Image (cartoon, rainbow, N blue to C red; front, top):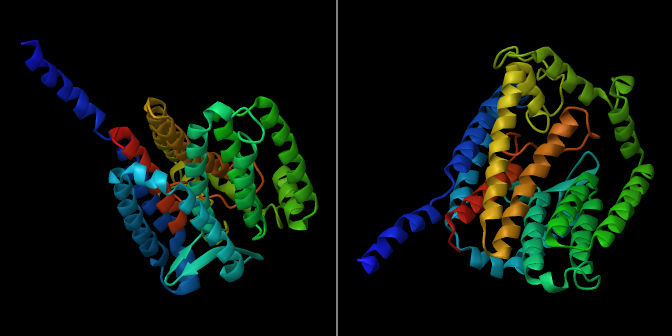
Length: 375
């Protein structure tokens, strides 16, 4: 009697263990769909004036969304152990893409940050984020006994991050390098790196960041624009001022979907990095709050999935993927709301662009993979 009951009792537990996290899946799909609606609303006027086709960007974004969904569901069912074995090749490929960007990348605004691979255009920074997360997850799960030491537990991850960050600075992409440093710091903090080493490296990083800002005129202008946007409203503070106008005019319920005025060429990058400002103007406090709730649920489930993992590498990977989404969302909100210096950081799942959307979908897919409990 007891022998026969054992498999029956184990079956429900096995079913629960292999079922993907439905709240994460539902919120991810909802955010992608909402992003398509807002890209269509934010980009039509600019696309028609610049290219004579008001639906150009939404068609492209729809294709990116399809590609992202394919990547996401592929990540759900991929064997994680295969990806773990490819940690160093993935890291090498990301570094190679950054080098190729410096040599052959598309130059815009005085920087080379985009790489054309045939008909496909990509931003290698997004690949570098994933590569770094996979490497750090491998490192901290395999070096726990020596993680407090300087030569083994501290130098290697700093050197790898420094290599990727250095290649980004050559583009130049100061914000991208800072993003990777934030990932390193937060994963090292949880991974067990000595607080003394982390504190010292943080002070050194801030000093180096200040030096890089002081040596670049355009970075100084961005900093002063952040500190006093209305004092530079016609110059470097223009974009932030228009963003704040958008939020201010939205009120509680907004001007109505499609009725926003800032996207009429007043707000640069309205469909991209500043899409949250368009949401604030057209859908008001209610619309922005719904975005915050959706992101909050995604991040809640992401961190919960990470904490539920039994294997250290799975746990660190889940945490790192959650950080990619969380840091991106927080930085985007901070820039759009005037709480951080202007920097091109897309909002996960919402902003126009294939690289960001596909990587965000991959993060969600791997988190769903982890939630299923199978390697």
